[in-house]
Image (cartoon, rainbow over all chains, first blue to last red; front, side, top):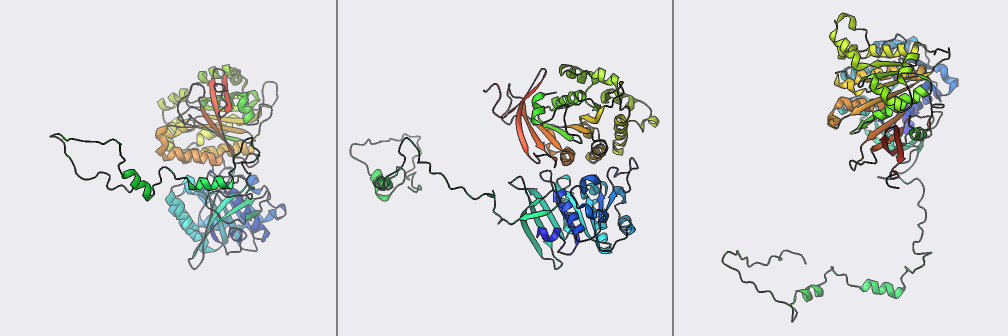
Length: 296
Length: 268
């Protein structure tokens, strides 16, 4: 499912790439850019958190004219007047204007790096409204936003993800070389589909998904090596012959009670000590057997 | 400068990676020995250093650096070190009239809600001025060191504003000027529930290329091992990307020694 979404086989909409400190989702964002360029679509990037150079690194240089980098970085708040776009211009009207200013042939893709920065400077409700409006206006076919889920309240994260057609949450996999993506997709009919996949992003922003059956807990990457026999190559004998094995099976374990053993233990043997007890006046003697409820 | 830490991080004053954003954090321990390490490291490397000392006086850092073999007074006179003495200057900001204060770097003391734009402007001008020493040679790439950033939270600046400030510093110093940044953030045990402190630390780790986290030993106090330090390599260009390793350390008079867990000289 991850490959279908990234390569745009599913029709656009709003896609959220959710990451945490443990694993960065920016590489997935680059895969989206790469895939859109290969489809010949125009890509508009609102970059607030990383530089243009960092996002361009590894992308196919032949399609470079199709990427329109609206420079928020290095001045996303307008402190030094070095940027063309500030975070305060994250409005439906301004974004529509930015996209329409560039002559384009095919439907465009809007990449937001990152939504976390935008949410820090605007009310979440307002941003949700604007994203919804952008979807309706239709000037961009697909909006992909990067969201750092550990930098916001859970309610905010869930509200933004609720608007999305697809949410890709990335986390580290047990094998350090790849990551794990949990993709949740909502179809137009409202049906929800989820899938967990292991993925790897190459240096040229190509996404590859490992088809591995999902196992809870530790995933084994290599097949089990045949276990070495620990009883070989020793100076003493640890093996049992057939007779010894049979004798071992027959041994009665000390605390496993069979019927005969129970009755043998409970029968008083001749010569064993007897206990006589004479209660005095203050004793509260209970005639019941205190061990009656034991299942022995 | 601690030679063992240099070898763990594969860097030295003669060859270190530029564009690095290093976050030093601690919890129930004191990571300020690391900021002294980086101060002497970058001064030895011949870089232009802008040091925001918000929690200690200049003489404190000077005394410690003397033991590590670097003279801060000389560096300041030569123009290699720009030192913002937060404690001393703050009295001036707080006691004077309102009108002239809006542009000063410590203006957040009067109006914490306004953000750290002025502080950023101060940093920007410090690293771009006087880029040559008296012999006419250029200083190395600019470096910004901050000790410590979490004190701004207690002064009323929001975590979001601090993250904006570090983003701007990173954009200017790391991306444009290919310099380095080292920031210390501290956390008290009582701050576990503190949203601002959590947010600040997580936000900085998202931005950083190397995170060093210092904590006390989970088993309690030990005379020979002062704590453990976790190194988290976060730069995509690093061969050790997204790997974390834990070391034990001991701080002594003229430095600190680092060793793998279980290999303290007291044990071996």
